[in-house]
Image 1 (cartoon, rainbow, N blue to C red):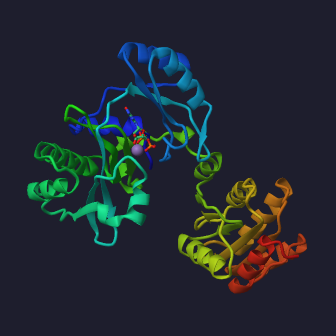
Image 2: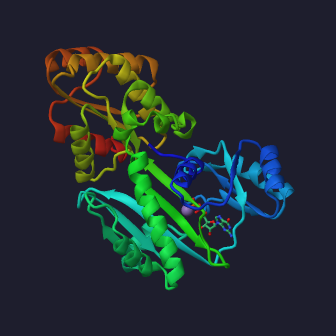
Length: 379
Ligand code: GDP
Ligand code: MN
């Protein structure tokens, strides 16, 4: 689960990490009033679940309350990476002498938390990782001992030449590491961790991703979920109980089971296509889920063909076939549909589908090849 910056900074403040004061506004008038209260120049920042807000015009410095209201009005109109902006954060603009990156992720490869710092902060850390990986300093932490003081200090000297700054950074690392376990995060980042001209360290942006498996134990964190932050397709999928992730390709995929969904996406790529989404309709296959899945997939204008790949086990192929027939009665299909079903009740499924004028395949390679060709514009 993603948190907004304003939520992440509130959590991290509890662990002692220093942030400038800030307040949230939902209207330009509110933003102007906050700027008035804070006094002096402010920064107005879009609160959406996306990085790179600065580059998208979602972070603007305003010299006075009037300008803060105007900046908020502009930012509240923006759509950043498909996400509408419903709120802005207003904080005093900080003078920045240097920007550092600091982050903790749970690293699956080493099965340990990995702490990272880089003096190349402020910009996209993914870009630094790709073009200048030597500029990111890392330490893998043994969770039995926690982050040891000498590890934090050594890492801090990778990003700070000044001893005082390095000690302050080492303390913030300890606080960030403690926060990760405290809130159940799989990722926590401060970027930038600014050094001010008078030599203080101040966090100017925070990102936290909560491990969904930790939410049951932390109702107060689960309550931070913002249903308005999802794209309409994601919100619809969540309500229907589907696991859905939008991707950038043109082959819409509707599959039962996460493993088969991933195998299907691999095969789409293998035959030269690009999946438009990951979509797992899950083990049960009520026709309602299939209807929701088809609506979500067809609402994506990038989708040029839809591929159903169903392996019937607990999921019954005839249920899925009924769902397809029902769904296509509601949703007009503007793209071709390729259906592959095998397993429980597949013979009945084929009867239902052919009766409704659909072709049904049983071979996975066949079906994927056909969907890729149709998405590419083949007749
Ligand atoms: P992101 O682009 O989504 O990561 O948003 P950030 O909050 O990290 O802001 C992007 C950039 O805007 C930062 O790296 C800073 O360079 C700049 N910025 C953010 N807050 C302030 C501020 O208070 N003062 C100044 N001068 N720049 C800021
Ligand atoms: Mn940032």
